[in-house]
Length: 446
Ligand code: SAH
Ligand code: SF4
Ligand code: F3S
Image 1 (cartoon, protein in one colour):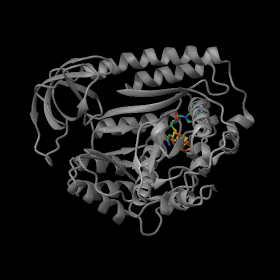
Image 2 (cartoon, helix red, strand yellow; image 1 turned 60 degrees about the horizontal axis):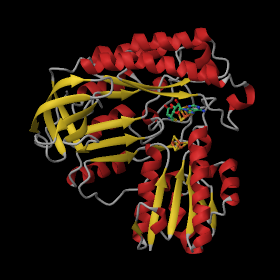
Image 3 (cartoon, protein in one colour; image 1 turned 180 degrees about the vertical axis):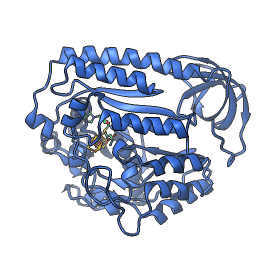
């Protein structure tokens, strides 16, 4: 039997795809990339904005056509499957199986029954330990599932349920197994990794649940496994404590890269978004981070055109960009999500205004990215080469600061860690020469 799992959305979905695949492999499935060759197609969906929902609808249309021609089982999973909108879509397009993101452990019974739906959250069961990978250099390790925040624009708490943290012993054991299997880079994964082990609630003063270390102590523990590169995504500014910054500074294996989504630069907008912090609080975190980790690279997520955002509010986002000087930024146009508080209480603003602001923000970010990337020219950095680049004769990878790098394949012929010297930079890429392999286990800061 052959299965095809199509994955939309973020790293959480990629992780869930692996979890599903390993359960399917356990009952004898092999995997194909093209759904036309599969007996079972699972579509792992995202609902965070309108675009991925449209994409899911279009793939479901293709699958319905395929279903009319031959016997095939179609499953809808992921965030959209958890929502009424997705469940209606599933019925309309005649899918056989629907599993919400909290019901991953039900894939096998679902397939055995042929027709099945489950939307209950069984979060703890969904922390799965994959079989040791073969030839993989980077791996994700899920440390929390779900989200307890209440950002007014966001559908994720509805689709992924309440936050649950995985046991620290299990996390450490999994990282050790990955290290032993030759994995060089581990990313700890969660909607907000830094609320790891915290009691439910909002704001900066959440207490630790009994039996859990803080996220800072978890980083220290995982750092001691000797994994050469340790990353973590995503962090919420409100719980990005001084102790986490300290743990980063003390733990050389943790990459000098922090993704700290700000969402907006204006206090008025932050308040309406219910982000729990002010611009000043956020900038104070950035100041502390830069003070303690001068070589850190920073990235953010920003939403433009949130309901009621004025030109003045938007100028606050532009000026925040100038203060922070991000290395990278992921910028989105606000997309109204049915059922969220923002959709209920606020009116959307005109699309052309949102597009215009997005363009201006992208321009500003390009300026700072180039500034940040250029600063590496002439320096020696460590790069994890992951494979061939688009351009002929080049291999591509990324630095510990998550900057994209290309190197001539003649000097970095295989995947792995290398030390290289940066010769040239664009706003999105470092070009490097002079590659020397780094013995695994000797990760260094740059
Ligand atoms: N838990 C993470 C992000 C999850 S969603 C965090 O809090 O940082 C990834 C990003 O999508 C968010 O950071 C936000 O910038 C964006 N996003 C979420 N909902 C959105 C919406 N309704 N419209 C546009 N962008 C949205
Ligand atoms: Fe959404 Fe906010 Fe939770 Fe992030 S912290 S997933 S933006 S509700
Ligand atoms: Fe990720 Fe999309 Fe769900 S961003 S958490 S797959 S809604």
